[in-house]
Amino acid sequence: SQTQNSPKFSTDLFQGFWHRPSLIPNIIAFQKHFQAHDNDIVIASKPKSGTTWLKSLVFTIVNRTRYSLSNTPLNTSNPHDLVPCFEYDLYKNQVPNNLTSISTPRLFSTHIPYSSLPESIKLSDCRIVYIARNPFDVIVSLWHFLKLPKPITLEECYEMFCRGEEPFGPYWDHVLEYWKESLERPNKVLFIKYEDMKEDPNSIIKNLADFIGFPISMEEEEMGIIEDILELCSLENLKNLKVNKEGKNRYSTRENKTYFRKGEVGDYVNYFSPSSIQRFSKIIEEKLGGSGLTFNMSY
Ligand code: A3P
Image 1 (tube, rainbow, N blue to C red):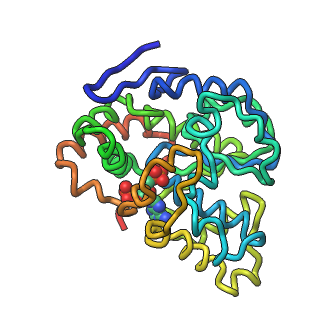
Image 2: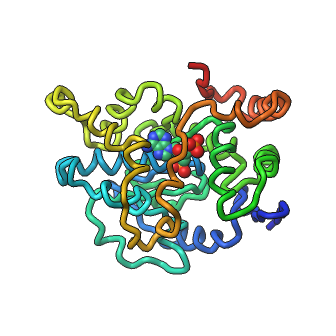
């Protein structure tokens, strides 16, 4: 395996993607031991693409008859504590033995690329919802997130992305693997863009609910359930919750509000010079060109 060491951040190349070295044993254990169930729902993403938002939405849609929206665990827990991540939470230095006792459908998440997912996820009927975000906003969002524990500069973060050596990168290979799978197997992988969620959340929610097998009925729609779900899962609402920190996940060690920053499309223009934008745009054009995958950032 290859290692790249930016001054403050090291990643190793594993199965064609760059990962923090400490995560690689977890990924291997996950690949070896996880047994998917046909009704599992897996949320997949590149970090900082809207994972937290999607987790809160999927959790709420699936559990809307079990909990009233005023009494949902989402009011007291960070969404990451409700939808655990395979490589960060579940397979962290252990093989979990209690996954079969989780109530169904089981909700999980991962940042692992499609090609590295366990065969049982690929071969079972479980569904994958992937959220992608334009890479410029991902870089800025990641930098804000990383710089809290690590003194990494925006330039270092940007260069890491240009080289494709950021965690779970290269960005373009990650999004393209899920994008292609969603085109080939639309019943298996739903590909959502953060920008579309911002622009037209109502239709995305309806489509998402259909895909995960919890469709929203006409009656529910007339009663305003979609608006209620969106309000509950809005950045402002989630950011200001007093969540309990008793969960065992890594998220419990961070301040809840660090998961909810600005939530805007196109914030990157406030951070990158025109020449940096041009340089990275060229790379992205080369890598995504011809795939049909584009991001609408102009509204
Ligand atoms: P910004 O840093 O640009 O604000 P992830 O959840 O994958 O880590 O992605 C984090 C990004 O999603 C952050 O973007 C965060 O603010 C934004 N986000 C989190 N919750 C959100 C919500 N409920 N609605 C919209 N955006 C949200």
